[in-house]
Image 1 (spheres, helix red, strand yellow):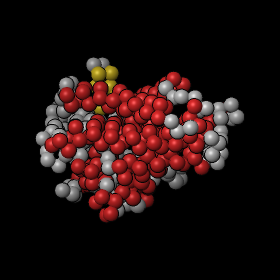
Image 2 (cartoon, rainbow, N blue to C red):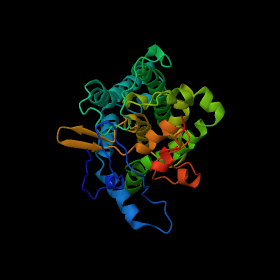
Image 3 (cartoon, rainbow, N blue to C red):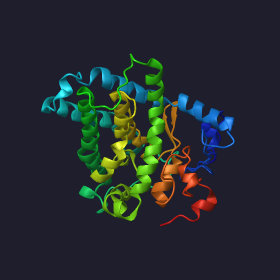
Image 4 (cartoon, rainbow, N blue to C red):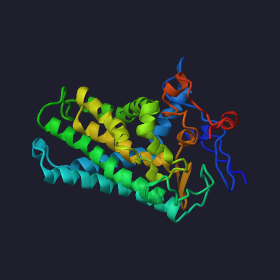
Length: 328
């Protein structure tokens, strides 16, 4: 049974086709800034979708609570001491569970919406020898917590220590320039998308794929816990976006923000559903491009609204013609 939605939101770019067994858009159409001549309709759609996306505000609330209530004073962090270091790690583990566990429970344990809006109609086989403990979820949680949260925390801890001791090349405080501080904070997600493409493309070269990235790609039929399930080498590269804010005019909160985006928003790109429905409330989750990456391996290395996949010929729009050439 087909379902139609009427909206002026960017989600209409994805021409929806639903059935009781699968969900797939006919075609992915990029929007945003990277078109010449400038396409103001695509820019408008990109801006409105960004501003109206509840995930943006959830992420900003998490950042504010983290910075103002769950982070020690900078004076305390001039010395690398166990007490505050372990606090940062425990806090990050808690944040990851707070974001990922409820979504995983709703979609894959309770199966509250069945396969409605699910890209792959099959449920993951949780008894597979390729995973640690012969279980995809346990494997994903292990790598996310033991490696992911550890390296995430290391980058964050070192950022605080460097800033507290005045080792930053440039220091920007909210008091110095309110406008620059706010604008640069809003630009952080965009910087992350460019960094993600570059690192992800690098990880697909033979040596790094064979020795690191293969672990993440064990998850073909992904779940929310798959997002941060990576080899330590991949975590080191993937989370290195924090280092950008060591060398450009920035505040440590910018580095913290990019780390939280990389660690917490990975859940959306791997949850396996185009929409998550809670009674009468629906969260639109346009991540079909990344589902295709896990399905085909050699396409869609970055965000569809960033130009690199289109420039390098690795963009897959999800059309029928593309789907027929899926690599097994």
